[in-house]
Length: 111
Image (cartoon, rainbow, N blue to C red; front, side):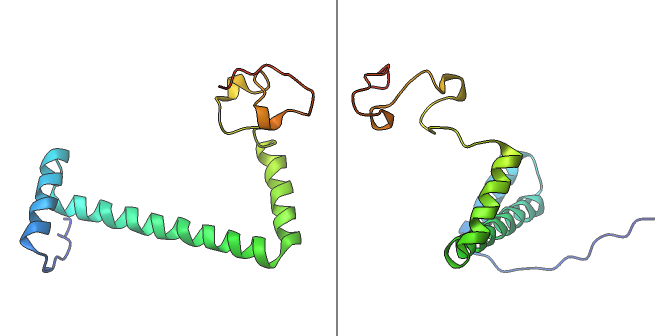
């Protein structure tokens, strides 16, 4: 026989309770599920924020380790795209003005 999880009460404003209830109704979930999901999302955001901070710390404090990381990342993921301004299937077909060598007219389709 499964035991029911222990529960407690927390104080929230009426406005907050109503917002949680509205989200729960829209999602077809209990209010506790909405709160649990919000907590998981916040924990995930904090975890990725810490990863970004650690990466920036490494980039600034240990340039050699950062260069090693970038090189290894490129081996695993492949080279970065030439431009993040277009869909991958258009890569190499369009030359943006700032990417052209002097005197190269290129295909100027990015206007």
